[in-house]
Image 1 (cartoon, rainbow, N blue to C red):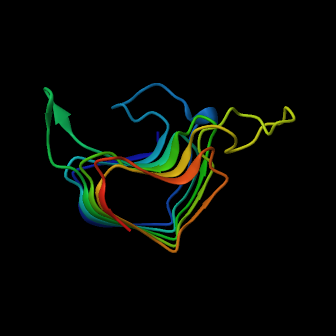
Image 2 (image 1 turned 45 degrees about the horizontal axis):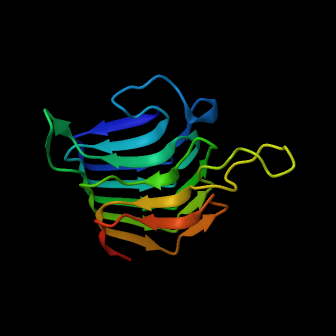
Length: 168
């Protein structure tokens, strides 16, 4: 995977570029194989400026810490500005958030792709495509997509889970 932030606070990441192994797959590490950028546990007040990520299972994901079956606090107050992310055929969602994230904002971001059958209908390979997959998968609370573009997703640009509230 790419960068894994665990319990980080009041941080800024500028111009992070990441390309993960082909098809977004590599051996599992902390269940985040193929993730370009992971925000875990109680990471808070983090700004990511102009990231460019490709070849990832998820370009960015937020995950909730779980120990012995008990869920702990998740990431909060996260802002992504001007991000561009290209999904792979292995991507269910390009930009991802798990339950537990609160106050996640995407400003002027682009999501391209999301899981597909891996072909363009003529036997040629492509990113994104024809079956289930999303540019954004939202499972958190208070998630904002401001002036964002979702393009060539397999299913829909944005998918909001039933437990998500206050998605704008």
